[in-house]
View 1 (cartoon, helix red, strand yellow):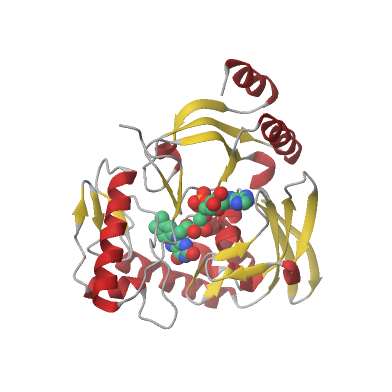
View 2 (cartoon, rainbow, N blue to C red):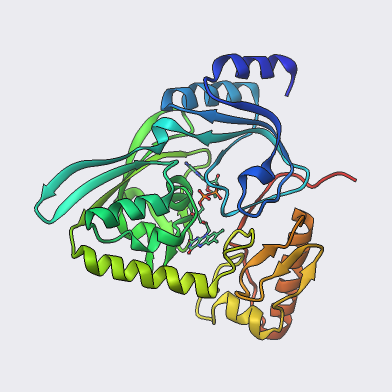
Length: 311
Ligand SMILES: Cc1cc2nc3c(=O)[nH]c(=O)nc-3n(C[C@H](O)[C@H](O)[C@H](O)COP(=O)(O)OP(=O)(O)OC[C@H]3O[C@@H](n4cnc5c(N)ncnc54)[C@H](O)[C@@H]3O)c2cc1C
């Protein structure tokens, strides 16, 4: 990115534009090299204008959520990474359909656990599964995040997106192709907000369920260390990825300061200053060992972006 481009960004974006900003500050793994420009936008219009400019200039773009499913390589990211703020952080009760059902809509930057808490406080069922997930609504929608048998696909009624042609459009549930930990969107599509139709239920029962879920998470997941949650997707028709890794004897396996968690084998934790290259090598070793033992190909759930660091 040249100086003129940097000047344009600094002059046209109302919030922060940070150049050569280390991505490790924005990922739950605490790993990642510098991005050319980390651009925070506060409104849909600002996002749209900046994207149109970036595409025109040929700069690659990417949307960052809460960085909880990302592994950013050590060489960092070329182009612009967008962070959504302000207008994208609102939760709204839109309409009460009838005495038992209501519609809520929330911006892509809302943390799903806060959305889950909002629904819980209102006595609305269906979002309790989000309570322990550290992602944003945009990231959770894109990943079809899920837990405890629930997932985003079960409760989203529509989404609002900025498509690759620069138009803002609504997509209803029947247009959304969700899959296990994924939503198939045309490349370049940005989720602006998601809408839910939720039913009122007994708040006390929801609260009890929420406490049980959070207790179970604390017992089974290494929440005090940086990670990106489950590293691998669960292979279909097989044991869970964590079980396969555990039974292959890989808990505690280490490359540099990246380690297969001793608490949950499908988590890789950063024990200090792990590099993306350490995590990627550990992923390779796990895949090799599990394939040797079970002939199962473990596919990463974590999204890997950026460039390798040139030596
Ligand atoms: C401790 C821990 C526990 C976890 N537990 C779970 C769990 O129980 N279930 C589960 O499913 N996941 C879990 N995760 C993984 C992660 O929280 C989810 O995948 C989450 O949905 C990712 O959201 P994010 O905002 O962090 O996305 P990011 O990691 O920031 O991004 C993920 C992808 O989504 C894209 N994206 C983000 N925002 C948008 C947008 N507005 N429009 C278009 N694309 C966008 C990004 O470009 C990227 O490709 C866990 C992670 C951690 C660290």
